[in-house]
View 1 (cartoon, one colour):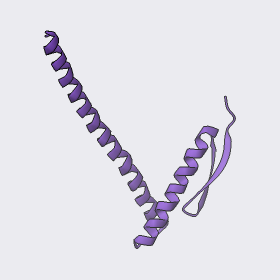
View 2: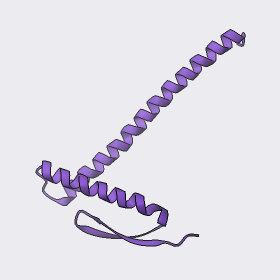
View 3: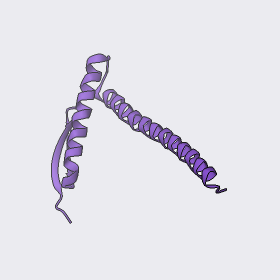
View 4: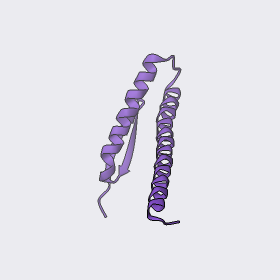
Length: 98
């Protein structure tokens, strides 16, 4: 078992101490940086009352990206399945397989 790592991440002017696996550090630091950048963008471009509103907008933005990727992947899978089925039917007809 690998040793746990203690880190501190700053998000929206708050520090969050975490104990993590070392393999998670890079991803968590990048995620915190992305949240900070997006929060700053929202604060600059919109009339935001407090940090909670900014963080809610960030959460919605990131969650919608994940959902959209899932939808696009599902559509891609459906297209690939249809193409494979058509190819299978073509090969079966050429080989005389029913």
